[in-house]
Image 1 (cartoon, rainbow, N blue to C red):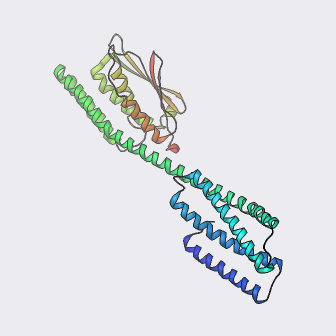
Image 2: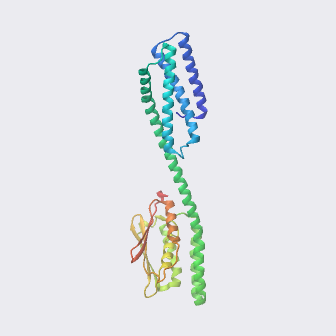
Image 3: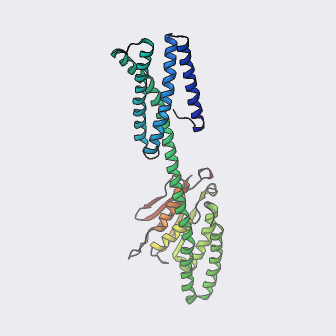
Length: 340
């Protein structure tokens, strides 16, 4: 079995002292009682098997560490300990037989020693290593999940760092085009842009915000983009108050609105309608009617991947993307604080 390093040497010394003392008493007083001899043999086996198991474990820790060779290590160690233990049974029994009876063990006695030895050692060490196997497997799983979580967190940070430059670049382009067309509209646009960007800076370090905060931002953001698209773009919301305290990653809905505008062609006579709808207690649907460009827009799909990666960090529930031919829909989970 396994022992803490600081106790192992003490344990071995004490066991050897007890064994030496018993041997001394046996030979000093010529004790030949079967009970005493059997107890002495049992004590010797405990010392030998424990020490041997420690040596085998240390050797396999170097050659077949649990975290790399879990299944192979389990069977290798179990078989090695069983073989070693049976050798201890046979050799010690042979020595004791000669010491106390002067007769070597018969084939039947050797067979019985191996049968009883297997019946004693195999169940004990099987149970022990199964427990050890499960514990090591759990450790590997926890470590794997932790590494995956850290990887996703790193990706999340990288994605968040790309949100601001992307948003800034798009809106400066819009502002630039408005200046040449309508100075008054460009001033209003700049004022709205400053309000929206201020909100983005305030939530930059937040991993989650309430749905209410996101929708307040969306109202300001939609007023900003309506300056450019006017009556060609509409936003509809149908969300109950009970959902407003649930949480989502910031700028999730903004990315979906931006995605809808990028991939659709629309006008005042054939507007783009974006809807934010509740589906059930734990999900929100953002959909738009499809008005695809005649020439498809080249895209990497980074906006939707961004959302999926961000959600992966906070919950196991999936972001669902549906194209019905009439509508493009994205269903996003609403997160309760306990899930974070």
